[in-house]
Image (cartoon, rainbow, N blue to C red):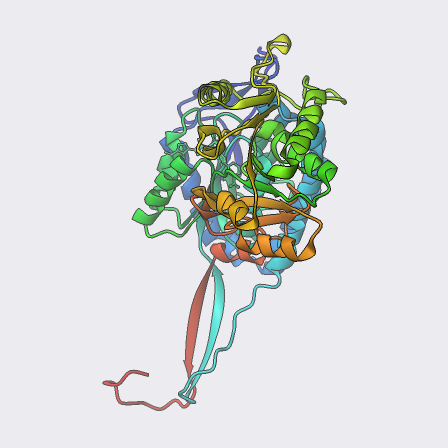
Length: 490
Ligand code: NAD
C-alpha cells in the first residue's frame, strides 16, 4: 500500500474514483516528490457529474428555501474554518505556496460562505410599474441552473469559492473541475459537503490529468452557466464553448498590473507594497503588480529599496515559519519564468537584483527579481506569473497613465502618492477592475473583483458576484378577468 494520500472525487454525494479506474499522482513542487493519488476522470465522469447536478437541481435543492440554503452555506463556512489546517496543507503540498499564507487564506475563506449565506436571504424581485393598469407585474430571481466551475492552480480553494458560494446562494448546483497541477485541496473540500448537510449532487468535483477534459465540461449541453478562472488563452476557448450553448460565462483571466509611484509617495510603504504585489505567493497571482511605473526622480531610490528587500527574502520550505517565498508551483511554470528572464537579458534589461534560478535549494526556486527595462520589453508587456518586477520611468501624470494603460490587460493596479486629489484622479484613469491607493493585494467577499479588457468578463464577489448565477423572470398577472382585442400588443 502506497503511503501517498489517496483522494476521491465527489459525484452525486458519493466519494468515487474515475469510471476508468485511472489515477495520476500530484507532485509537491518543493520536494519534487509525488504526495497524493488523484482520480484521472474523463468525459464520462464529467457526464455523470453534470447528470447528478441536474438531478439535485430538479430535486431537494431546487425546492429548498433561501433560508435553508443559507444554513447550509454557514455550516460549510464553519467546516472550512474547522478544517483550515488540513486544507492549507493540501494546498501547500500541491502548489508550494507558503503554509502561513494558505492558512490565513483558509481561515478567511469561511467568510465567503457566510457573506453569500446573507445574500441568499436577500435575493428579491421587483414590482415594476406598467402603463396598462389592468396588469400587476412582478419579477422573480431564479437560479440559472447547473454551473461549471473551472479553476486554476494558484489559489484553488479561494478562486473556487468565489464561484461556488454565490452559485449555491442563488440556488444553483455545481460541477467543479480543479487544475491538474493542484487538484488535492478541492478534493479535501469535497469531503466536507455532506457534513454541511448539503444534499447529494449539489456540489460535484471531477479531477483529471488533462486540461482538455475541462473543455468537455465548458461545452456540455447539460450545463447552464460557466465560471472560469485561468489564463486568457484558455478563457477565450471556454468563452466560445459556452457561447455555442448560449450560456452566460464569467471569466477571470490574466493580468499585467501597473503600480504607479509618484515622487511624493512614502517610498518605504511603496517598496513594501511592491514586494507584496509581486513576490508574495512567488508572484503567481493574477493580480500581481508586476509593472512598476515610477517617477524618474525617485526611480533609483525606490528600485534600491525594493532590490534590498528582495535580497533579504527568505526562500525555502513552504512549511518553514521564517520562509517568505516558496518555489514556483510546477515544472512548466518554472521553465516559463526562466524563459522570460533570458528574454529580458537579451532585450537589454538591467538586473537590479536576482534574474536567475536559485539552484541551492532543489525544487523550482527562482530568485526574486527586479529589472529596469524599456516599456517595449517583453517582460514589461507579457504576464510572467512569477517573482519578476519590471520597472520603467515617467516624468508627468499623463505619461504615467498612458504607460499604465498600455497593455491588453486590465485586472488591477495601484497608485502610490500622498496627494489625495492625485490618488483618486489616477485611480479613475487606470482601466482596470481594481485599483488600490497606497495599498496592494487586498480582497474581500463583499468587494467586486474582475477584469477590464483581456483580463476577463464579469465580476466575482460582492452583490455583482451573485448576479451571474440568477435569471430574471417577469410575471404578468391580468387583474380584471376580462378579455381584450387579441390583435393588439399590451
Ligand atoms: P490555465 O488556463 O492553463 O488552466 C485553468 C483551468 O482550465 C485548469 O483547470 C485547466 O485544467 C483548465 N483547462 C485547460 N484547458 C482547457 C480547455 N480547453 N477547456 C476548459 N478548461 C481547460 O491556467 P493556469 O495555468 O491553471 O492558471 C494560471 C493563469 O490563471 C494565469 O494566467 C493567471 O493570471 C490566471 N489567473 C487569473 C485569476 C483571476 O482572478 N483573474 C486568478 C488566478 C489565476
